[in-house]
Image (cartoon, rainbow, N blue to C red):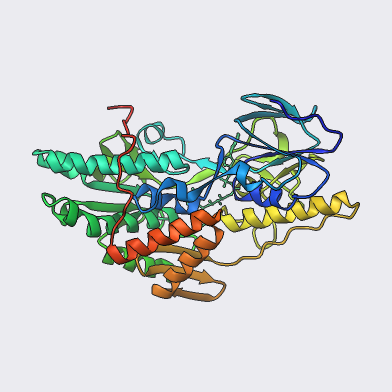
Length: 426
Ligand SMILES: Cc1cc2nc3c(=O)[nH]c(=O)nc-3n(C[C@H](O)[C@H](O)[C@H](O)COP(=O)(O)OP(=O)(O)OC[C@H]3O[C@@H](n4cnc5c(N)ncnc54)[C@H](O)[C@@H]3O)c2cc1C
């Protein structure tokens, strides 16, 4: 794979997500070699994937080339490849482009969609974890509206205009809000033959409130916002099947839908080879100590969503959101710098900066410790925070301009079917 031989220690990092890039950024000028592997050649800003799915942002605004992020790093090498296994006895990783030895290994592979073992849902629903998947949703949504516009079959039209989202966590809520706004701003203007009321957005959640990870106040507010936008919320409802046409719930209800988006959960994305006590099977996450070192290994670390660090405040590990990943990445980078200077590493402490979710224009909810608020101020804060953390100056400017444009025009400008989506079963 053409990595230069080195006498310096080599750190191999798997995953260029929030955790991986925060870690490597801390090691810009060090006498070590860093090799980053990711199956994509870009970093994905996952919190804004739903805006790509709903034609609010172009995909390029939320992705950033990994090579460019580390232009200024010395002895840094990126390889676009899938890491398939780790051989911890011989300190080697196996990848789709060959094997490589390491002195230290940092696993920051994040999560993958969890279909809870339901093969039909895995086969027919639309997950939203990557940019290509978000683009699939965008194409399918627009294709289905185009089809609805020309069909004379009332049942088929209903199915094409019924959008069902599984999971009312932040992703499901944000998606539902954006789809409802799409209906309000776009449908009546661009599709004169379709009535706004014909398009339905259903949000289905197994628990008894939307936004379960947030405070009850935030849940209540978000539910009100969603209902105001016309989203139909179904709580304490479990989905049992989807055959490509009908979503069936455990209590026997049926929702005809040609667009079923699965936002109901994730599970860790571990790499083969690290077993024993290190992998907590229930969550598919690596158990790490306070230095993010995987238990039972001397030179293998895990960061972010894939790491499970049990603490008094977080007995089941930190929440699988961006902040723990960023903070752990930075902290381990600092610890590596300390180690290279012969100083001891320091334990990680998570600083909870709060949680937020947006439902749409002027509608967001924020929990910061005991401070809870919603509405326009929360929405502006949400926008500011997302712009701040978006990687790349160009992406921030483009996203900001897009948002101002959409705010003034009630538009979602990226309504393009560039690469039509073909459902495999059709
Ligand atoms: C739709 C969606 C919305 C979200 N919204 C929010 C939000 O609003 N706020 C928030 O705080 N968090 C949000 N999150 C969660 C947040 O994105 C994650 O917590 C965060 O990305 C975790 O960072 P990470 O570095 O651990 O993993 P990731 O960012 O997932 O990065 C993992 C990287 O590893 C790569 N990779 C994985 N396995 C391999 C392999 N075997 N070989 C090569 N490469 C591999 C992947 O391609 C990816 O680039 C959202 C997540 C999703 C999916």
